[in-house]
Amino acid sequence: MNDYQLTDRMDLSVLEQMQTGEPFSTYIKTTKGKVGVLIFNPMTSRPEERILEGNVESASADLDLMLVKIWTESSDRFFKNANKILFEQGKIVPYNSAERENILMVNAISDEEIDNILAQPFFTLSNKLSEFTAAPPVERILRKAKELNRPIKTINRIIERLNELQEDEMDTGALERHYKNIEA
Picture 1 (cartoon, rainbow, N blue to C red):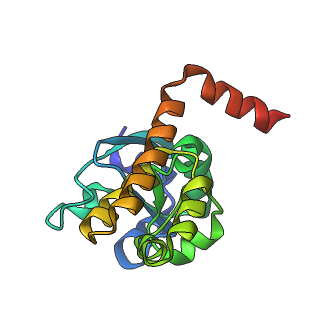
Picture 2: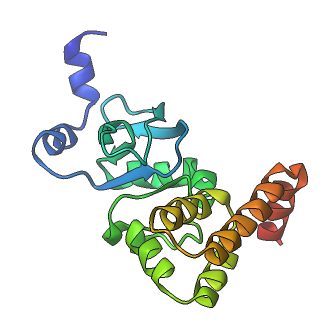
């Protein structure tokens, strides 16, 4: 295929926006390991796999390797639908708080929210921990609690909840039961 034919199929407004404007939405991974996501490439009009990598805890990590920039509303809808399980597990979250408000996900939590929760009394933290259904946000809270030298009682409660969630993830029937509850 020559360049002329490829340009014919491309939406040139998307190309212009990619060069001069801000993306429609941006998402970031929340875990240390690699996360594979499915995106819709507006340049080729085809779905593509992308691997997000890098250590989210490292200040020297390349942020571009951990982010996904989405340029159109239709690509954003595709991204949210194709990666729904990753959103539910809290492995990817909107990168800025304005986008986070549009997605009401149980496991999506910002760094600011983590700081606020850890500054609250023990019972507030305990109640918030019980709301999570996946391990990644609890792992982030644990890292931050250790960084802030929170009391051992607080850290033990976070570890306890993390263990519960990890046991559920290891249970092969847990995901199946989760989707049966959604369908019902």
